[in-house]
Image 1 (spheres, protein in one colour):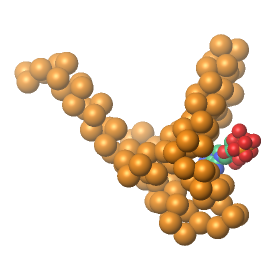
Image 2 (image 1 turned 30 degrees about the horizontal axis):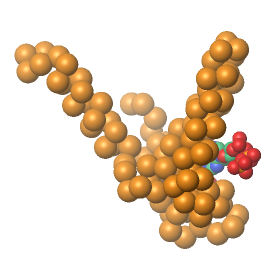
Image 3 (image 1 turned 180 degrees about the horizontal axis):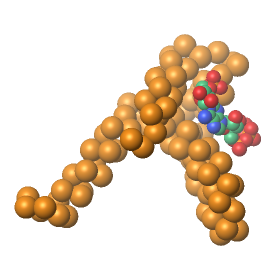
Image 4 (image 1 turned 60 degrees about the vertical axis):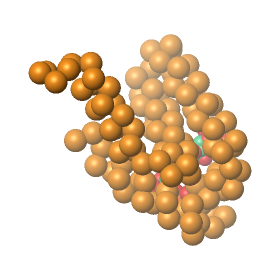
Amino acid sequence: MVCQFLDELQDIIDDRIKHGNSNSYTHRLVSGGVDLISKKVGEEAVEVVVAAMRGDRDWVVRETADLMYHLLVLLRFMGIKFDDVCEELTNRHMARIGPNG
Ligand SMILES: N=c1c2ncn([C@@H]3O[C@H](COP(=O)(O)OP(=O)(O)OP(=O)(O)O)[C@@H](O)[C@H]3O)c2ncn1[C@@H]1O[C@H](COP(=O)(O)O)[C@@H](O)[C@H]1O
């Protein structure tokens, strides 16, 4: 189990993309399209790097949560599920270890 809440968060994001109002940060974010969402993903990734280079574990956790959320919004906006990413990682692993493990 990586994060049980991830599935639920994807569903909430889907709902906000379709039915959100101005109170929803997600809805405001997706109204800026792929350019704005991608810009935010880039910013949050840089913030993870800065926090890591300062050696601040708690800060890294908070910035990684920001990054994961924005990444999920980007994926769902493009019709991609986190399961698709998981499948890609699994395929890479299987290709590396070969059929006999
Ligand atoms: N997990 C998150 C989440 N993480 C980070 N953020 C927002 O991402 C933004 C982070 O951007 P910055 O750090 O640059 O701060 P900012 O200056 O306020 O951002 P900008 O206005 O410049 O974009 C903040 O506004 C955070 O509130 C999130 N917004 C929403 N969620 C979840 O998404 C779901 C739907 O939320 P709503 O769309 O708000 O209903 C709920 O489960 C929320 O908990």
